[in-house]
Image (cartoon, rainbow, N blue to C red; front, side, top):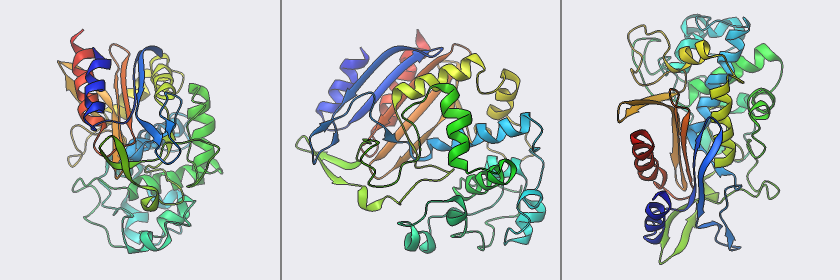
Length: 329
């Protein structure tokens, strides 16, 4: 049933990518459609790393929660405790880790002229932060909600300050490795060893067109732009189910943190949530030119739906359809 549905969308030029369904880390269904690289004719496979876009944010949320669970920080701590040299004094004094992770800090995103000028060289969180950390806040901390890529970057910098290691090394050691995610990471643009999928804006007459390689930066950040496979993400869901990454009570806080009034009701510590057929899911999506990804984990049943597309706007219709099917069973 799932294969027939995705086959039809692929036939219409509406899907290229990979799909997996699992339960408690056990693979139930997996499939791949289309080309990972039209220039070479390389086919998409379940082992192909695909750009996650903003899906990486959920890893950042878990990483900060791990540090909180170990007593190395508190969600109420201010930025200034860890980053005393942060250029914006209001951020240092008033913005909390909680606000960074719930998009209530007022910190702008890095989609600006400074980022565009330096995106081909940025490979550190300090570099990303320098593109926005002197800009004024969008609103007073805690008074509103605005989705932002800047807050997760600052959260990643706090992780680096607390652990003394890079964000990229931390998530590799404390999230990806324990979950058995062997093909997940932040890869440099042009990396041929990782064998990642190339993103495309459209499929015309059965051929992917307009690769997004010219629109990607050198490397992603703690706000997004890493890569993973559907197989790795099913393993990740299994690690959530087993408590290998965080105990259930801490995960409950990540998925539904305390509210102070401005938080989005369906967004936790860099995790989204919703319901399908009365069943709760948590996860995150990602999107951009040639990037379309969605991850939905159902905590009560242990089911997970993962859709990674290397085609603009490809994942969500597939993910929503499969999630309804899974939730109804």
